[in-house]
Length: 68
Image 1 (cartoon, rainbow, N blue to C red):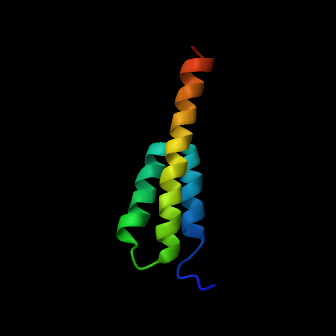
Image 2: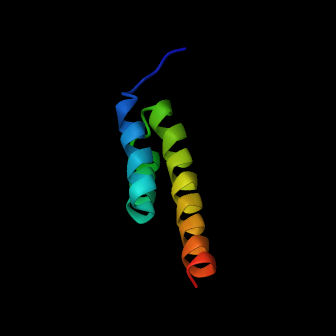
């Protein structure tokens, strides 16, 4: 399996998406739209976007349902 890119870039994206979903969403979009030469960045960029949306949704549910 050939990897064309550095794996640390997507890992940083997941960490950013966990801490701040909005910034993680932007980071994932940058990977998807501006790093078209790397399949690794394309794949993980989409996953970072999905992850940021899930984290944002879960945080909203926790904030409004559990904390009132």
